[in-house]
Length: 241
Image (cartoon, rainbow, N blue to C red; front, side, top):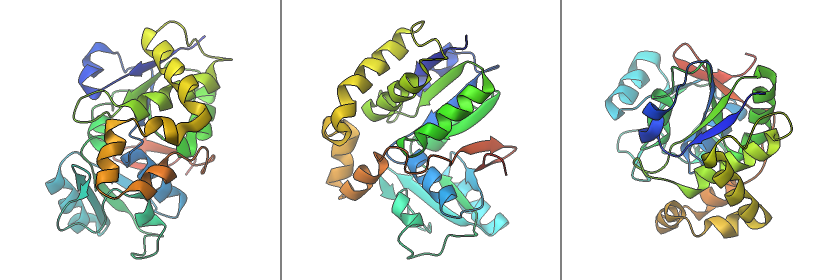
């Protein structure tokens, strides 16, 4: 029986073996939620990079849109920030375009997880798609929480618990204390996920930046149940394309 484990921060990745596993990258607020939303709404593919200069260079080389955020704020000189509404509000046409993205936490976590057999993007918005993919693969799963600048992040860990609950019938969710802890947090949170996560330090940061609309949207369960961004070669594309 395959297992599911939770890595609370990319700083802990050296403690885990990625080879042979499915890595689920999660940065609920907001990188992975934005990537899922982008691909669900017509963006063709996403280049996810760690550094701002690399993101800007890809924009020039590939003729794609650029999206960048640092400390929760859109970086100067880029087309988009890190809000899912950048792909929904119609202010900048994104359908049919590629996007290069760099964020404080999420894209860093992704780039550090590429040794896994498969790398997919997880969010509450596509929780069912992630669970379905994991079942099809029948490999051990490692949820890589992006956290906040290397530190533990409540909402990413709660997602890990939600995924573990959905996989509990066919995956071992009890061999890791990290998974058990994430499950307990999810069981506490799921009756009122927004209310529970209002305690989160990152949510308080977002609300200070007047991004409460983003917070509420990113906590919608299965808004895009068939959307699964997967890493292929040098980019994220929709699974099956």
